[in-house]
Length: 201
Image (cartoon, rainbow, N blue to C red; front, side, top):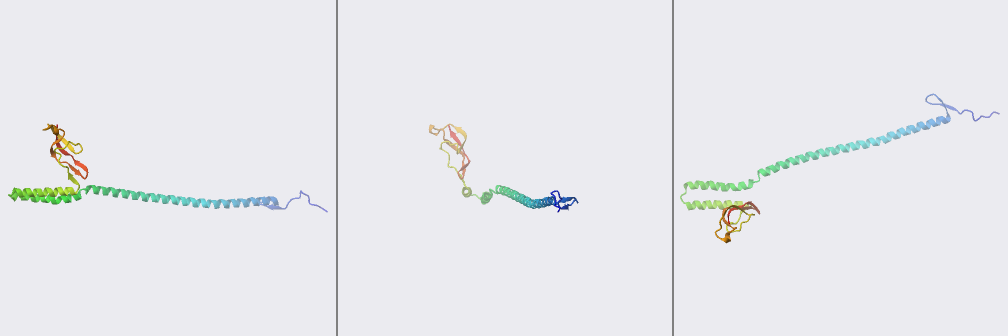
């Protein structure tokens, strides 16, 4: 009776290259091919999420750029509009005051015509006084108010401007205002014109 020895060859198979392989070698090759296919499948699967993430990031970057461009354009429009409005405000800042002064200008025109025809100087004087009062009230309504007379007061650099010094008539008038050449004015609480005065020395 004949027995197979350990050296007896295993059944052979043929690979893709036509080479004869043992059953064990064929199984190893099949396992390697399966692993390679699985690895390639996994690589393709992992690449897809990366592509999706990159596309999403690119879309977010583009969206951020669009928002920046829109914001910059809005800011430029706001800046130009604000600058234009500021220029208009400066140009028309005195519009209200000038409108209020126009009737007074009309009064002066009428007064000048009256000077040519009137013989009563007192009536002319009264007319001019009325115009002056009207003018003063208009300025007062705009916040302009005159200072009190500086004559007899101690010279104050915060309100007075000395244009000359003269010998004081008496010792108690030294350093005091002897005469007032031009009255000072406040605009609200700010001095807009110092009173021009003569000071005793």
